[in-house]
Length: 303
Ligand SMILES: [Zn+2]
Image (cartoon, rainbow, N blue to C red; front, side, top):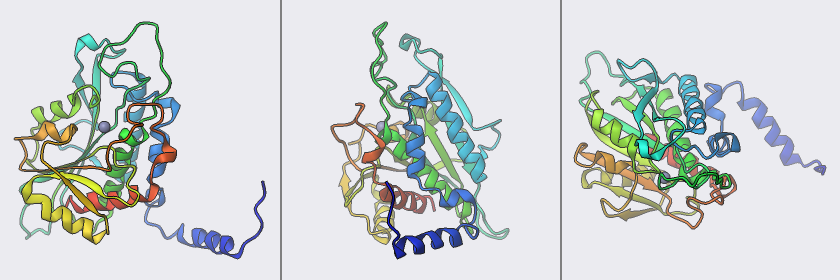
């Protein structure tokens, strides 16, 4: 099909051409929906923890962090943090991989030191072909591809989008940990391992994004400890995102791994739907503009 010439198209094209060279880094102009499209592709095979698809997704995230100039955690050899999977799962690989990056605080030499870090996190694993959700696989069976676009390629995209904004910010008052968890789908195993073994700068706030791809006209559902709610409300107000508050403990997501360990916890979701853990959780149902707004919101919560 051909497209008739329209003056608006010419103007848009001109804008694209003009804005390109002046953008501060190619990654800043890459729409976050592209991360969702990538991770939901069949090549990642549904990103089941302990499988080659999970490893490929981890490598993709590492490459993105490197492009942004994000560092490994202080003292860590790289971005990958391996943890054991329960042997009874009988996955092709006995371990899962968390991907963890670090943006140091930028503080004037005579300024106050930042006492605590903020962790922005999202699980990147999903349910593979859908037959191993409970960890037990029926031999010889193979299900259809489960893309997991909303659950939780969307959360990965939002955290990567926050990372772009924070990496380019003129100053960061607090250090930021960027955590991409695996084995969430089978019991929050990756985030529990990170929370249990954390030995870095104390975490003052943890923000988790899980299923954040369907914002539309909102509202964004938020579970947050009391002290941090005014911060969430202010950031959402600035971005004109409507909020619906959930009671603490309502969401079964990685934030649970930090209960009792971290003073302020926040979990963000655009809510459940019938496509969860089915082949219907596809990229065409993701609100691309919503991802960008929630990335800005997440970045605001890391200051
Ligand atoms: Zn999830």
